[in-house]
Length: 308
Image 1: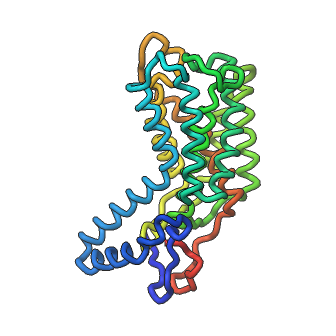
Image 2 (image 1 turned 180 degrees about the vertical axis):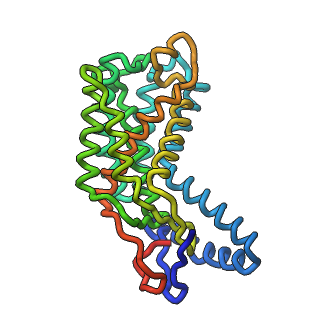
Image 3 (image 1 turned 45 degrees about the vertical axis):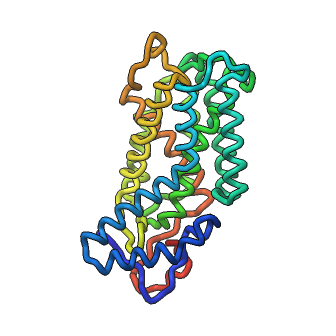
């Protein structure tokens, strides 16, 4: 299913939010029009590539961090005077400074990243203290045994969501109240700590998540057309993507679960549930900032405020 934006209104591009891309807006628009004129196959190919480019742009911060994990695993000397973890902290901060300096990231996104950094670091400190996973390498820039670069990995999730929200012009039908998502997210966060001492409430949290989010449809725009999918499915797919990235992270020995101490093994698929619950927290924080907008009931209304 799809809904097409009115062609009679001049579109604003989400690229205008990032100055280095603004110069290419008109050129890219002409390319899209030519592809559309060539027929459905060329049109599909153009949108497919455009979708991939937008996803890559949304993943920029996380992809750079993942590239650093891989590069330092294979090429960083164990005998370097600066510990690998400390190098990752400095590199992550430098990436942030450069992205802000070159307008590759907005101030709003930087704020979201900071919030996620704090939320993630607090959970990391607790989880490592109870032995859920370990960071085996030495470093100076750490809190209670947790290297400071770990907070940036959580921040990358928030960065991805907030950038996707702008790039794909998210709209919704039957979106749950943000306050309700906030209560659920608070319960999820508490359970990440409490389940070590009491009954794990995840089955109830999953059920509540399905009841709240199940009826919601998310509309996303790749180019001119709004396409849609269940929001619940979208969050599961992102959680799956994070699970793949986590396997890469543990392969680079950046951290290790108890079953990986004697050699790398894949992270169990059961961890996907934990990432889904973490996605709920991430999504809720971004939704609280962006305030979900409803999908217009018809295709002919003024769409000047919609980014392309």
